[in-house]
Length: 287
Image 1 (cartoon, helix red, strand yellow):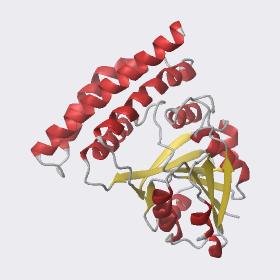
Image 2: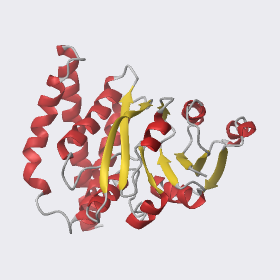
Image 3: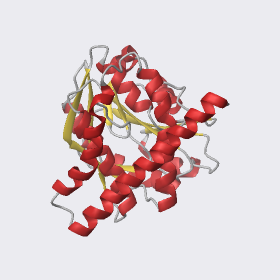
Image 4: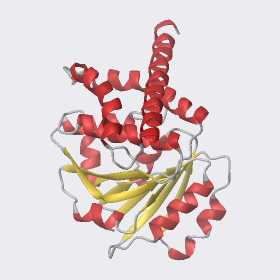
């Protein structure tokens, strides 16, 4: 088996259907499989999975709810492929996504692609834009990272780095920590823009706030995990916040009204992130 694609999922059959349709449209002449890890969904996903059984490519495993880090690690343990690609159930890969990742594989590298928000939703657009800004800001440093909805690596490399850290309490930060650990142990990150997938996570103001608040609660864990490497990561903090304003202004695809709206939402994301961090700090300090 050449490739295994790991897809953790939880209670989102509609999104998972679109993801699977995108995966079955892949144009690649390799032996490969899809492993769906159901992280304790309350919705029965098996009828959906059975609708793809005729292809003999999908494998399904259900576990109790233990978070995406555990789900991805379980997926790799079940995988038969030598090369492992990760995506999420709210992502639709372009037809050549897997082929591009495969063509750029390296033994000592994590290969990451480009994620594109395709929803006409400013909250979803701002969330993806924040990831783009973080990629741009940390590129070339030992704190560069790829989000786990779009990266791939050899199975042996995954285990040499040491799997995803399952102690993260939520679905935030475990991919960053994994990449930082890889960079500090002699591996490198290779960005391939043509390995594209489309993100279809539709946000409201409430879900936007809750997601970034959750990211803030996970950040305190992330900093604890990387503190042995964290020598000067905070020195460029003011430049990061400046980038939140200047980066959207440089993008020609947005009009001025949309740019101002996105800058405002990026600022709001940081308020939610900060309050999430403070909440987690108080919880840890005072119980």
